[in-house]
Image (cartoon, rainbow, N blue to C red):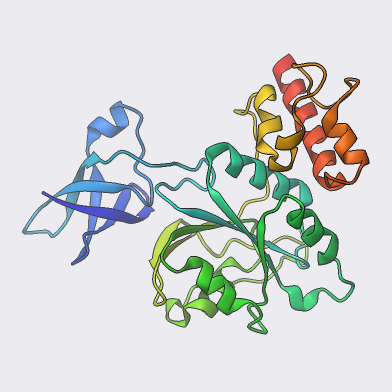
Length: 290
């Protein structure tokens, strides 16, 4: 029996890197029985058939964390990648990503890619919003090699996951950081104005500069329905200094004498962030009614 890390999973086969070899493995039936799915990033114990050089996963070590979407485990940080243009940035999806990562307690770096297409300075209000929280952000262009060294530095020494919609340039950025990866890249669909899925499965990749990164398929929807209404206020870090409102049950929506709304009026909370707080809160309230 040897231990290793799942670096890829396709069609019921899991590829486990032991540090010396990568073995194609299947999971024992007990995992299906217990409704446990091995994930990319899992540290596992495997038994290897010496004749076929294939193996079986017999144990999954305890996970330090697990993401719902993308489905990966044991990462140190999430790099949320959005394009400024082509496709246009989806602010609602970005806010949901930020809230979700606060919920699971992972460090976030926001990467605003294709900055070379920003002819009208559309990134400025987004940068102002991110700075007000504050979240780390990097403006990049895989085409013009803008911000690549800074992004590479953020990835060094960590296990990171690249997450974001299709077509925003995740694979292009990784190719710019580590040219030997030769990841497939795609174009924007002229019909839907969305990215095409060039990354078909999550894969844990080693970087020459040190560290590892999970490249994941893009997606265009995301829900937060497993978050409780009462928890949401704590997932907006900029609210933390203003939560001692007159009413302990204040949700910072329609209640009087709310310190969060006062901070908003005084310019201490970004209006874009508050707008999406209310939107997410209303979605959660509506979901609970049904």
